[in-house]
Picture 1 (cartoon, rainbow, N blue to C red):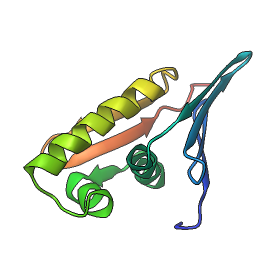
Picture 2 (cartoon, one colour):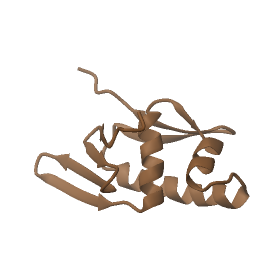
Picture 3 (cartoon, helix red, strand yellow):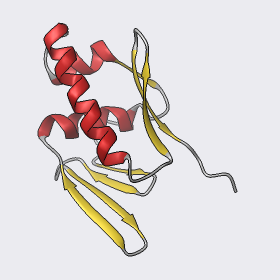
Picture 4 (cartoon, rainbow, N blue to C red):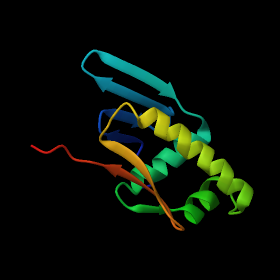
Length: 110
């Protein structure tokens, strides 16, 4: 799974090496260039989609330490990712109190 470079998230395509999050829905196309930390965090969410991503695991992997200040920093990045993903209503980053976050991809009912 460490080799995965591209992820399909709802109407988004996320290219980790290029740090590009591309939204495509019909004629509506938008490319977001992510910061290295945003890209790293989104990649962790993608690898753990619909599962809990423990806060401490993300902090240690991305920031190298788990403390109050890095946790506050991570919250800012989660907020930024939520803003990007808001274009697709089937995607949601949920807080799991006292544990971490979950990136939920709601499958459309057929």
